[in-house]
Amino acid sequence: MPRNEARRRETQMNFVRLRFLRFVVVISVLFVVSVTGAPQSYPRRIISLIPAVTEMLFAIGAGPQVIAVSSFDRYPPEVTKLQRVGALLDPDIERILSLRPDLVAVYASQSDLRSQLERAGIPLYVYSHAGLADVFVTLREIGERVGHAGQAAELTSSIQARLAAVRSRVAGRARPRTLIVFDREALSLRGIYASGGIGFIHDMVNAAGGDNVFADVKQQSVQATTEVILARRPDAIVELRGDPLAAVVKAKEIGVWRTLGSLPAVRNSRVYFLDDQKTVVPGPRVAEGVELIAHTLHPDAFK
Image (cartoon, rainbow, N blue to C red; front, side):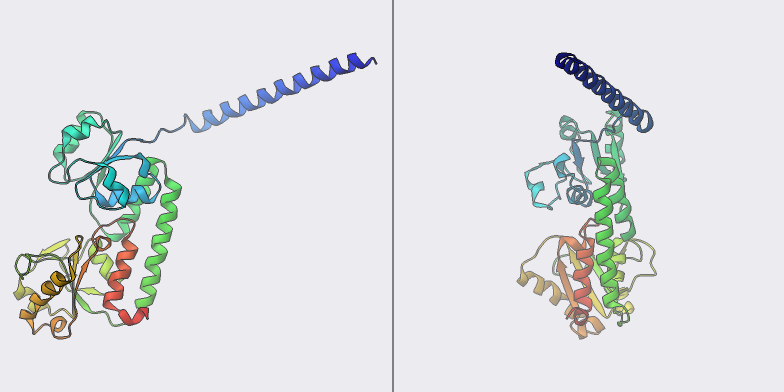
């Protein structure tokens, strides 16, 4: 066979092969689309009015999708560069609408805001405060909603492993009956709000090896008078705050409890003041918050 004829036939065969490969690729793509549907579109302009959800979004790699946050967001540091749109009690609806979000995370109790955003056709993620286990539910839901389900699942497993490690460390140790205070008037024992027997703060202290003195009160917060506290006789008092205080101020705040000198917690110098957001925000740092509380209640377990 002449050499030119052989080359011509080889060229034709290569052309046929290429057309066949193109056909296979097109059929494969059509098959995938028919089975899975069109590619899912995830939000790219997210506004979060909830610090816990904001932390989750950044922790799972969705930070670049967040365009604005609440007035109380402080973590991670990247949020300082984002616009602020109010918070639980004072959401700025005009600013929110002007930013053209494609997802807004709101509290369940923000009924007016929810109605206005729904009328504007803006998708919502509705959040409610609940227990420690619900942190993982929220984390998985948010991950799926914004296209980071895999990262959310990995983070959930990591947090749960850290919590299991804390529980193991404090297992078998005497559990101090603990009063958990999250608010009161400055330098005073008036207006005391303590954790009741449900909610993530109660669950965190329980995981850290403490028994909540108000565990029998099935609500998230209890307005506790000094008379009630004296009757409950806590072995330890743990005050939790999200805003950092100077050491001298913390010492003064601890000092106000000395007026209740008959309490075992006061008599044994077991009054603690933890001013760290990790202990009050039900987000991806809850395991660190539990570790901090556990170190406070059971220092010998971590030596």
